[in-house]
Image (cartoon, rainbow, N blue to C red; front, side, top):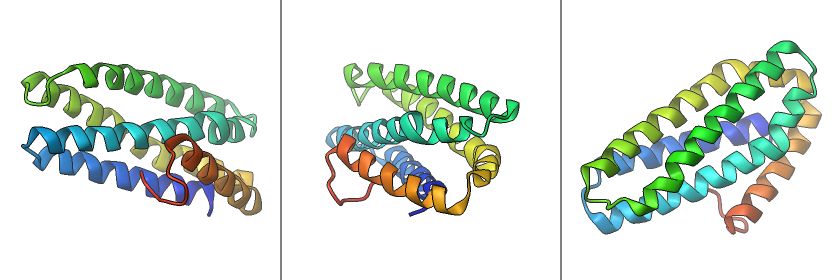
Length: 152
């Protein structure tokens, strides 16, 4: 699978998990959704940071370098929020506030990648993007322990 298509699919799937979270009241369901969101974001950030961003940065343009630097900072903020969430009671209003912030961060990040970075990444070339996507999907499954299962 093409690397860009893989990342777009993951963006769509994680946005869907956030929408489910917004509609979920029950504490146990919220905790399960949080676990799914955490796993999805962990796997996604690992493959972007280890594989996709270096490929984009390898284009050696100022724009590519700036986009990757900003994306890494956005990942850093997402990781900070994710580390706090397990300690917050899912019934607490603070949980909802943190989930809203996390959702908005992730949505902004995904939209920016799709609107800007992916256009630049197409310069990598179809064959390399296909090879990269295959390797990224395998690494995602390794990180998340999902074998051949697909997730955000």
